[in-house]
Structures are given as structure tokens and as C-alpha cells.
Image: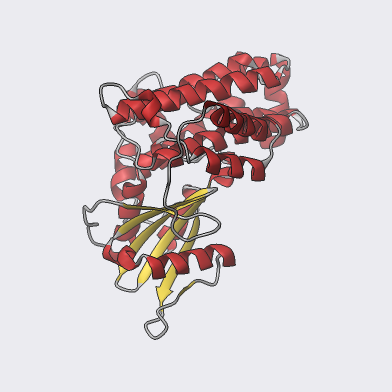
Length: 370
């Protein structure tokens, strides 16, 4: 269980174990929010088919849970809360995290049972605040109603209103958005077009609010690239929510950063832009600070240069991708803006003492560094 706990920490997830009482058929965990525990108990009673699946993903208003059935009566669960997850720069990519739910569940299974995980499909469920399983009923597309809902989402993001965002996203889910962007009956293309259009709307809104245009377009480009590279979306509206919470987190963090000391602002900037080839000029421009003041302020507080911290953070992000994705070394190197795959391998080994392939291969069989 020690490695599973460390995997949860690495993925910015809360880790729970539900064990079934055979006499009462209740599933209970001591270290979990009572409301969420009640939801899961109701869900398990209403939909016992969960026990017929090795891997399950349960989506709810502000997050999702990966459930792995490791024994007949034991479930190991990783809970991802969008706002909490996206505040941490070491989280998996926003969109690719959905593609890797099955991979993460398989890692959990293998860690617990020390045998190869079964290759089964992941079962997708949805719960909301009022009932354990939500059945979606699409409303006829009303342009004015859709515009009002979209406006509510934008206002919630730019004014950092968490509860309003949850409510607005629940309303958005009632629209059959993909049907508006179908291309020759290609559902995947329709979903991608919908997501790209949605990202563009949010991007224009945050620029008008006052977020730097350069940073906004970098954010837009990054998300659009992830959309285009994704082969499919296991839960389309969950992806919409993750994008929305990502923008929510970016704006909230930007507002907060304006009040931080320079060394903390530098650290936050690096974490938020870790996929880029970050330079001192970029940081100075992004923080509206003098380039000459950056390294002295940072090293005085953290005892390392900015370049050293960037390298360390890139390697930590690479560890996550190696564990919870099937991306090749070249894809990871490109994703984190290493000049070549060879340089990525060399940097990774210099920081960790092992190659990326060795880390990926032996992650399950050896303890993680604390």
C-alpha cells in the first residue's frame, strides 16, 4: 500500500480504500468526506454492476474518482478534485488525464496484487448533488439560453466564483453541443471542434478581463494541441469541465500571484509554463520584472538557480507522464520542450540517477523516493 499512497501523491489525488461489509453490504471508509461516502454508497446500491468491472470512473460536479476493484470486496479509489488538482503544476495534462484513467487503474491493480493487470474497458458513471446516477436529458438547442449559460461560466471564471461555476457547468451539460459541430457524422471531429470553439470563447473572455494576451494565446495553443492529439474523449462533458476548471485556476492564480513576493511569483510562473522552453526573458516579461533581479531573488530564497529549478521541475513532470501514460520518450521530450529525446534522457539520468525507461519499467517494483 505504501507505493499506492505515493502514486496518489504524485498524481495529486486523494487515496481511499472501500471495503465491503458482507453482513450489511455497506462500503465505508474512515478518511473520506461523509457526503462523498454517502454518494458512493448510494451509487453502489443502485448500480451494483460496479462489482462486475475491474475499473470504473465516477464523474461528479467538481471532480472524478478512479475505482479499481482489487479483490472481490475491496475497492481502491483515487479522487481527483479539479480545483485542487489544477492548482498543482505537477498534475497530469488536463485532457490527457482522461485518456489515462485506465492506465492509472491498471497500475493500482498491479501494485496491490503484484500480478499483471487485466486488459478490460473502464466503466464510466456520473453522479450529481441530488441523485446518485444522473441521466442526461438534452433540451432543444435554445441560442439565448445557451448564451446566458455561457455568460454565467465566463463570469464565474473571471470573478473566481466556484459555486457559480459548478451550477453553470451543470446547466451546460443539458445542451447537445456536439451535434452543432458534426462533420460528416464524425463524432470525434465534432467533439474536437466543440472543445476548440469553447476554448476560443474562454480565451477571448479572459483577455477582455485583463489577463495578458501573450499568456492567454499560449494557453489556448497548448489546450488546442492537446485536443487535436487526443484520439478520443472517454467523457466529453467531463473534458469540458476540466477545461473550465483549468481556466478558473489560471485566473485565480494570476490574481493571487500579483500579491506574492518575486521569488514565489517566479516559482509559480515556472510551474505554470513547465511545458515551454522557459527563458529568463520570458519570466521577466511574464512577471513585468527586471531580468537582473530574478536569479538573485530566487537563489536567496531557495538556494538554487532558476535554471536548476526548471530542470528539476521538468524531470518531476516527466516522471508523472512515464508512470501514468503510454507516451514515448520522444513525445515526452517534445511535450516538455527538450531540444531532443537524447538530451531529455541525459537530463533525466543526471537528476534521478536512472534512465526514463528504467524508471518506467521498475516503478512498480521499487519504493518511490519520498
